[in-house]
Length: 243
Image (tube, rainbow, N blue to C red; front, side, top):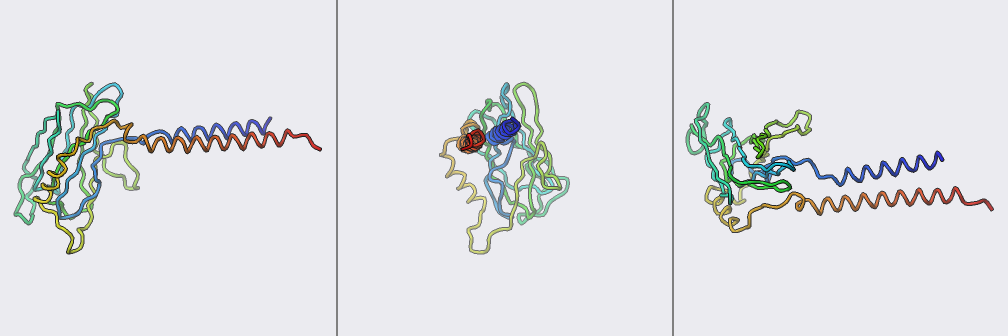
């Protein structure tokens, strides 16, 4: 009987592991793609998932850095949402190749639309010139229809682990070697125009991760079935009468 109890414990642990693997990762507001080249221009999307099952996201407020301001910022319209771009005076002028920058975009707010439970939305921004630093943080506030405001503003921890509510982080890497195609405001605008004909990236979060979740679930189920088979085989051997 002790063998049976041990076998049951192993099966239970395997089942728990399978359930854990099948659960989706904790979602939060991110910037996609998460990497861009220093000194250039880029187009990014702030990806906002709705994490509540009883409320919709109705407002997104993204703060732009003032210690490393961006001289050029433009936004792509999102159907059903209004957008407000706020410029402000910088704490101190910042030298750029276009001259001293005294004012820059400090905040972009989208509101009036709705991200329902189980869905996400992407808010696209073209921006530059990117500074020669390792990364830029974009603290973001997410407002729900019930009045709750989630503040995604925490910096990465020193030990490399992720904080509870991390701010969207854009990592910056050195520019490509000479000979690569340079990115300018004109090329960034052309890239944005080329993608404007694509359908808006609005889809249930479950659909976006279904294939990965299904693969994990099937793999975990196979693990459990294999363990159960081993246990049953071992029990059969123990119960076989001696010749």
